[in-house]
Length: 186
Ligand SMILES: [Fe+2]
Image (cartoon, rainbow, N blue to C red; front, side, top):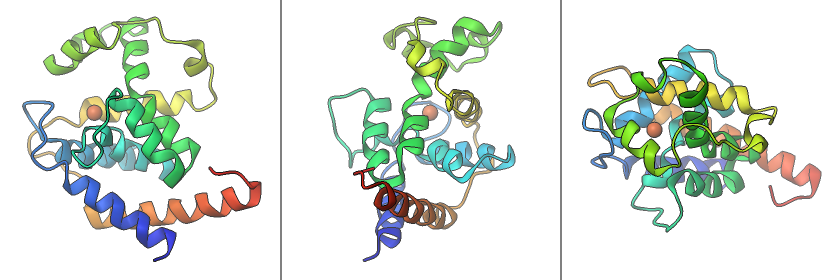
């Protein structure tokens, strides 16, 4: 199997495993992922940002059990498959929430109840390491966070799983070429 068809199959399987996984009361993690991708597409996000938006909560998949916080699982699962940018962006979604809750008036008040609860366990508003906020990809991490927050609406439009498989394959191929040219694992 080529890296692109493997990546498409893995992403499809991991997304399907999110059906019936509930973090928010309004949408399950499958619909949440599809809606987050849809918001990214509508916003004109790059392929990498769209894929990171779709897969930012992949750490909640029962196929990827791990003791780590879910943002870290996402980063570690995505990076070797789709490159550092996709992994980093997905892994930044909790940091971006803490940052926005601290710096943007009204942001925390607009969060879902579940998200407010989890914020407390994630260290609360602020205190985000400058390694995140000074990173050149940080503005895209903040965009992803807004797609995440908006992707919790019953019956809202979402991306199609087939479209995401194609996108994942394309990015996996690009990432493999880049890795080979730099002679690094990812
Ligand atoms: Fe999310």
